[in-house]
Amino acid sequence: MHDDSEIELPPEDLVGQGVLVHGLSQRQELNGRRGRAVRYDSETGRVAVVIKDVGKVALKPSNLRAE
Image (cartoon, rainbow, N blue to C red; front, side, top):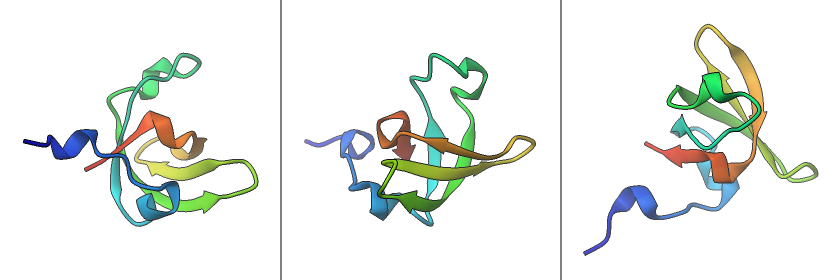
Protein backbone atom coordinates (compact mmCIF):
# COMPACT_ATOMS: atom_id res chain seq x y z
CA MET A 1 0.00 0.00 0.00
CA HIS A 2 1.41 3.39 -1.04
CA ASP A 3 1.20 6.59 0.97
CA ASP A 4 0.47 9.22 -1.71
CA SER A 5 2.27 11.94 0.26
CA GLU A 6 5.56 10.09 -0.29
CA ILE A 7 5.28 9.94 -4.10
CA GLU A 8 7.60 12.54 -5.61
CA LEU A 9 6.33 14.43 -8.61
CA PRO A 10 8.66 15.86 -11.25
CA PRO A 11 9.23 19.52 -10.26
CA GLU A 12 7.37 20.89 -13.29
CA ASP A 13 4.30 18.87 -12.24
CA LEU A 14 4.13 20.80 -8.96
CA VAL A 15 3.17 24.00 -10.81
CA GLY A 16 -0.44 24.87 -10.08
CA GLN A 17 -0.55 22.55 -7.05
CA GLY A 18 -0.98 23.35 -3.41
CA VAL A 19 2.24 22.46 -1.59
CA LEU A 20 3.48 22.03 1.97
CA VAL A 21 6.95 23.38 2.79
CA HIS A 22 9.23 21.15 4.88
CA GLY A 23 12.87 20.50 5.70
CA LEU A 24 14.22 24.04 5.33
CA SER A 25 17.21 24.89 7.49
CA GLN A 26 17.81 28.52 6.46
CA ARG A 27 14.17 29.68 6.58
CA GLN A 28 12.78 27.37 9.23
CA GLU A 29 9.84 29.71 9.82
CA LEU A 30 8.43 28.52 6.48
CA ASN A 31 8.38 24.84 7.48
CA GLY A 32 4.79 23.68 7.81
CA ARG A 33 3.46 26.58 5.73
CA ARG A 34 1.21 25.94 2.76
CA GLY A 35 1.39 27.71 -0.57
CA ARG A 36 0.83 27.36 -4.29
CA ALA A 37 3.59 26.43 -6.73
CA VAL A 38 3.43 28.95 -9.57
CA ARG A 39 6.54 28.32 -11.68
CA TYR A 40 9.45 25.93 -12.13
CA ASP A 41 12.81 27.39 -13.16
CA SER A 42 14.81 24.66 -14.87
CA GLU A 43 18.00 26.78 -14.77
CA THR A 44 18.04 27.05 -10.97
CA GLY A 45 16.11 23.84 -10.30
CA ARG A 46 13.78 25.72 -7.96
CA VAL A 47 10.04 26.09 -7.75
CA ALA A 48 8.49 29.52 -7.14
CA VAL A 49 5.90 29.20 -4.37
CA VAL A 50 3.47 31.89 -3.26
CA ILE A 51 2.81 31.76 0.49
CA LYS A 52 0.17 33.94 2.11
CA ASP A 53 1.66 36.78 4.19
CA VAL A 54 5.15 35.90 2.88
CA GLY A 55 5.03 36.36 -0.90
CA LYS A 56 6.92 34.45 -3.55
CA VAL A 57 9.87 32.29 -2.54
CA ALA A 58 12.08 30.00 -4.65
CA LEU A 59 12.46 26.57 -3.07
CA LYS A 60 14.02 23.25 -3.97
CA PRO A 61 11.46 20.62 -5.02
CA SER A 62 12.78 18.34 -2.26
CA ASN A 63 11.42 20.86 0.27
CA LEU A 64 7.90 20.69 -1.14
CA ARG A 65 5.17 18.10 -0.76
CA ALA A 66 2.14 18.24 -3.09
CA GLU A 67 -1.18 18.43 -1.30
